[in-house]
Amino acid sequence: MSGETGMKEKLGRNVFKEAREPHIRIRAGMENSPVLKKAVAICPAELYRENADGSVGLSLDGCLECGSCLIACDGDALEWAYPEGGAGVQYRFG
Image 1 (cartoon, rainbow, N blue to C red):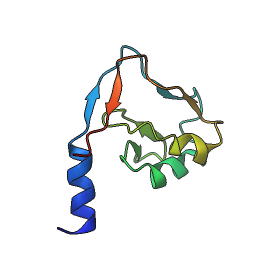
Image 2 (image 1 turned 45 degrees about the horizontal axis):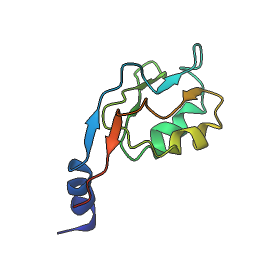
Image 3 (image 1 turned 180 degrees about the horizontal axis):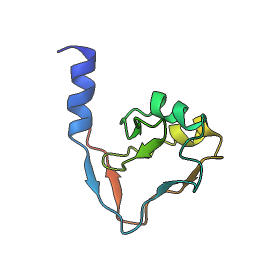
Image 4 (image 1 turned 90 degrees about the vertical axis):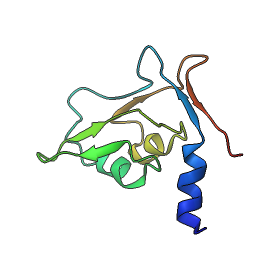
């Protein structure tokens, strides 16, 4: 088993419970901020994507709650909080 395959397999064991409200949001008007491109590059769960028009979109499915995006963006472009109790990721490394 290669390292990359092993990591994807381990991440696939995690369980995600959807929250009522998104715990990460791109601040209004910041979708085209260059700082968000850092989140596209570093998010280990690949939640951020650059759209054809250069804006950045976000899908929270599979968020690892690691905070990498918040650190990369210096908090300027994102509203970030942990999900409400009982929601979010449950790690199962097996």
